[in-house]
Image (cartoon, rainbow, N blue to C red; front, top):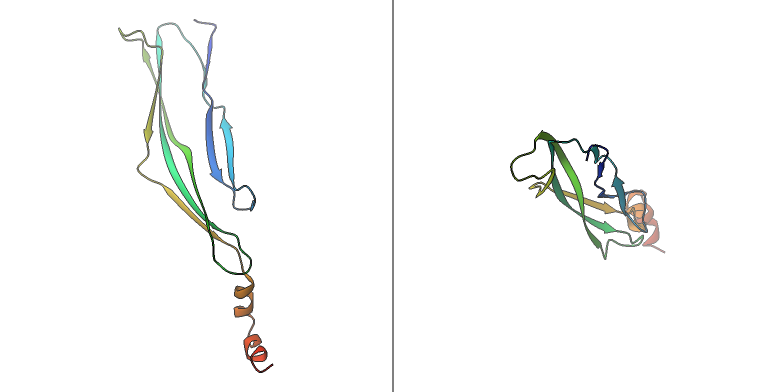
Length: 127
């Protein structure tokens, strides 16, 4: 057991505000690699956070939206102690975080542009 490594891959998702085709990205965290030491128990406590995003991508009007739900790993706590009578060497606790993140992205539309150009509507209406 002294020559073993414990590797735990965690997928962490996030919303990429610069990508309009596939905004949900995934990163595999490699921070969870640690050596197994005889007589030592390792405990990882992780909080999983549920995140939501509303995405308005139409250039002409804020009509339809795409809703996304994705999860991210937050607040990882590491502990180590001597192995208890149960004989468990690695313990991983996953808890749901009570906090969440909400993102709303709206594209700058054609109507937004017209509303910011002073006097354009006043010129269009008489014609």
